[in-house]
Image (tube, rainbow, N blue to C red; front, top):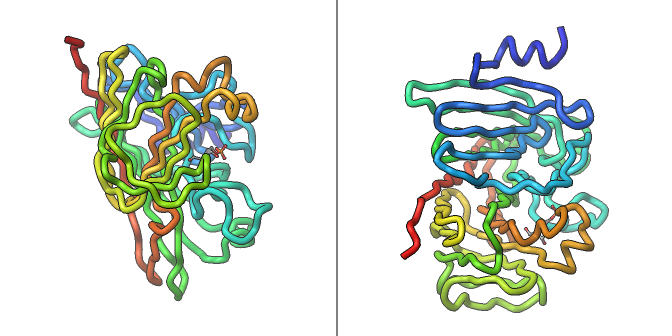
Length: 305
Ligand code: TA6
């Protein structure tokens, strides 16, 4: 029996959840329910796509150039940054955003409930190669609930006998009609670092609009954010818990060209709003304890006046 056959036998749900090969011998879970469709790669527990039935456009952006490749991060979807955010504190040669997003995760459970919500739980257990990068045994689980809303809960259990400090993010790429025609509210008055210019702490004045590369880390921010997209006639509402930092990122033209994997003008149709624990908002997890970082995305249709 192949891995895919075993997964479908153990966790498949007829007509609603099917595991299949994708890219270079990797495996994805394809989800179709009366409420929404989604795709989740087992590598990195990476939500690649989510589209409620009520939406004409996907809510999560994925680069047209994204290809599933063993050990390679995907441009788009919801990369899981863990157990550090950004560059590694000491080892410049370690991959940015940690190793969880390129590691093979295991399926723990799948369930379609009476409301038509599909829940999938994936787990990453510390392996030797991970311990060489981050020497603290841990169990990482992602619980994904796919419906008219999308909920993700990333739980870190510290399996060691000492406290550990963890940086993490649900590095979500949202699809927008045109980055120059959307705004982001919810961060008014919040302090942030502008990573494009390596600024000191600044304070956000008003809602964010976008007209250049944007890479801002908002600290002590547990607020709900909303992406306002009049052209798509929708708001994307981003609620979170267990996350005190919010990262807002769009590479704009030059950086998108340098990255080279966003596809033709892909930068114009994406906006990252990341529920994170980073910089002064990393989390300390005591021995044997668990921390949960949770985000929930909801789409509100609006009629333009
Ligand atoms: O979250 C924003 C950021 O840290 C940017 O600085 C940029 O590096 C982005 O993440 C993408 O990182 P990646 O390693 O996926 O190319």
